[in-house]
Amino acid sequence: MGCNSSTNSNTKVASQEVDYFLTPSEIQIVRESWAIVALDLPATGLHIFTRLFEMEKDLKKLFRRLMTQTESGEFIFDTVRLEQHATLVMKQLGQAVDNLDDSTHFSEMLTILGEKHAVYNVRPEMFPFLWPAIRDGLKMRLGDKFTVEAELAWKHLYDYIISKLSEGIERGRPKPKKKLRLF
Image (cartoon, rainbow, N blue to C red; front, side, top):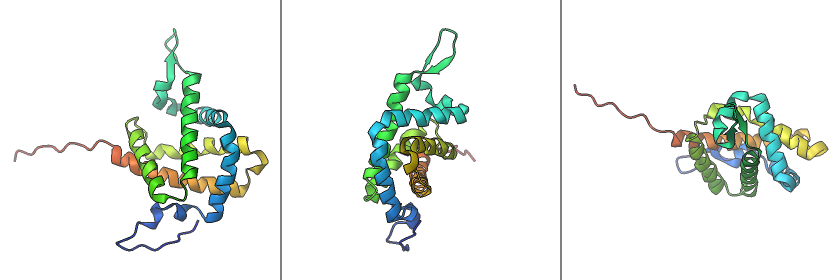
C-alpha cells in the first residue's frame, strides 16, 4: 500500500484516496482478475451471500426483504430475490473496478451507497464479516489465479470500499434530536 501523497489544508486526506490503499500493480491485478469474475456475476454473488449467511447467521435479519415466510412462519430466502441482490452487488463492485482511476467519483459513489445502507441498520462494524465470504467467492471463481498477490490486492480494495461505505453510513445515520432545556 502506498501512501503517495502528503496532506495540507488544500488537499484531501491521503487515507481517503484509492492510491493510499492500492498500488498501481494491485489495481492492475484487480482489473485483470475482475475480467474473469465478471463472466458470471450471478453465480459469484450468490456464492458470496450464501457463504456470508453460513458464517454469520445473525446477519440474515438485515435481509428480510429478500425473504418469504413459509406456512409454518419460518423465513427463508427467496432465491430469485437473493440472486438479484447478489448480482446487483457484483455489478456495483464492477463499477468500483471501472472507477479506480477516478477517486472523486468512486469515493462519492461509495459514500452515497453507505448512506442508503444506513436505512437498513447496517453498521460499519459489520463489514469485516463480509470479507471472508468475498474472498471465498473470488477464490471459487478465479481458481489458481487467486494468488496471494490477488488476495492482497482485493483485500486492499475491500478496505477502501468499507472505509467509504462507513463514512456514508455515519453521514446517513439519523441525528439524535436535541432536547429542549427549559432552565
